[in-house]
Image (cartoon, rainbow over the protein chains, first blue to last red):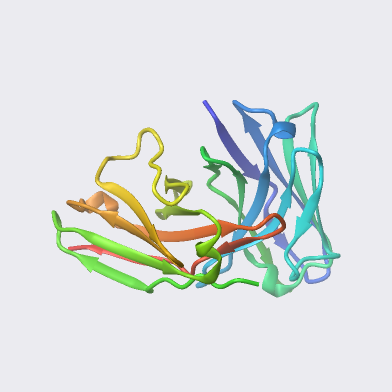
Length: 114
Length: 106
């Protein structure tokens, strides 16, 4: 079964760091377009970052320079390293395998608060 | 940057047809997908490439496109179709989401 499962969310102080993980099963992370998408409380969905099969990465302006997307071939996982976190980064973070047969996880919650 | 505009809410009586629109310049040149999101569940794609339905999605879900507007149609809406629906599209370097439409099935 093709699925993704996010983990690593939690409560962090402003300025802190957190690393989200996305465990992929049923497909190879290096052969797919993968994205992180978030939904802040009371708001819509916001795209955060994207990694191409060839490793090229892209970021939303709101996180550029603070977040880093990466993947592990050996573990077949996707990651999002989040640094210099702000209150406005508080959200439910989803991992998505893109494409015609897109798959989303249930998400992991990040709360940035003092 | 591109904007995708959806109505914030749509209501439909059970068994009737619900239509949710999504408009934006990007849709005139890129495909759209429709995402169904229910609380506590993983979102699922109900339509991709404007009008393609993934396997396992009920036939009552369909999509269409005209110019810069795409439409999700649910014929014979069921109570279990009550959810938030998001349209989204992509360029090579970015992804864009509509604001979401809350579908209420009465």
